[in-house]
Image (cartoon, rainbow, N blue to C red; front, side):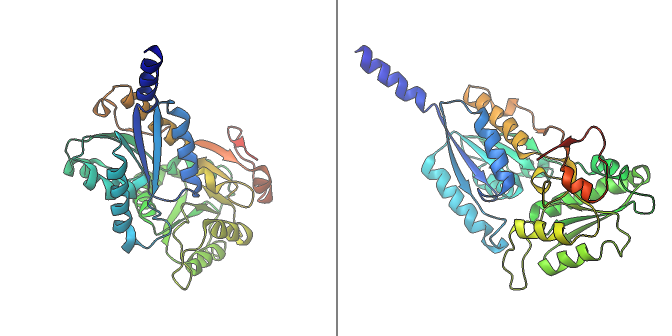
Length: 321
């Protein structure tokens, strides 16, 4: 009886909760890898984590809803107690399907203000999460100290994906509000094609640009409308740019990439989401966990890439391999 009782207790405890992570993108994407690592580092052994990738960086927008439908079918098959929604597309496509389910929802990596969406879809589900906002003003201020007089103008380049469009609006709002105090001029572009991206990189110096800040570059397509890999875009940009390169996300900085930046880390977003999930599984209501902005970014640089441009980063910046 003791052995049987032990086995029963072990069986219950070993599967205390099933959690489904619905990723907007794909498992090979550096941002996803980073935040998944952060989530997993915080989950206790009695939590079983399942994953579904919507792949919206690589499929056309016309297929997003089909991917969301498959994600919902996975949700129905697994019947998790908690659903994690990674990034804007997962939230905007899945919340309308999940809001009245008897579950807890934790979102992360959200660039848009979710207030209207959450107000529209109120039901049984209890929702909390982590917001992600590119560190535009901080990055501008740090870059300004490194650029020579007469070159204090930057070109911020994004692809035309949903997250990029949201980030662009956020940055433009910040820039308009703070342009006089920033001391630098900025143009913020969203770009659809590889040819357009390459043209804006090659023309930067002639256009009086002092530096390019690489945003997101994962939905760029070639002349046939096929997705160009992120590695191809950033590698080409590194090789052909005539002005220094900076970035907003950790995966865009490194050898053969941008020289540095005040960047966001997916891992810290994942850690925050993982802590929220663990608290919910332990009995805390998601509605008692405030929605908040993720931890502040970190200033990093790659010594070789920084030296290539003859730039000296601020003392507070951390060197990376």
